[in-house]
Length: 246
Image (tube, rainbow, N blue to C red; front, side, top):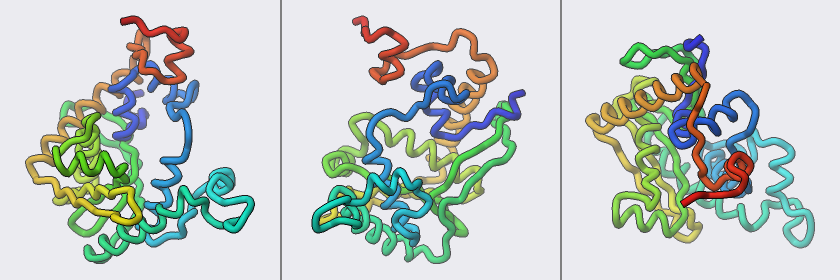
């Protein structure tokens, strides 16, 4: 049944990029996530510290083992690769405190319907909610951050996904303001760029997000002959036999 299909912005983005791969992830046949956890763990520390929590809160024991040094002078402490995350997270925490009382990591899991009448179970998690606003934290590599400030977009144009995601949460949580907090991944200069979306942008990107969710729900509801994209992933290597045709 369509109304039992769980869909979040992240999952809808996956279906828009590679429908068959996303579907196999959805049914638990082949996980979407591949590769190193370094960036994910770094971002988790930033989020935890920014939100006033312990830096390793809600991490598995396996992930904690990846973070902690096993020998030398830093035995039992965070590995050097992750110490910057604490500094950056503290900077974000100082910044968001100015918005007053807030709730962090607010989950949504409820029946929803798009403007076209497509029913689904809306899922996801907002990084931060205040009385009037929703916030999303994005940690960005220094070169990408500098390029974004200069040109207003990333090389892979991923700011479009960020806008659709935060517009979804603004709509679902009925907030008038939507902030994307871009954080430069630099412990010496942890710049923050607070991108405040206009109401016109929120409405426009919420509609774009709804369109992607509708398409993703359709893919899950009718999974026969889903398009498969040779996207260079491990999944694609196995599915296409390691060959990319020009």
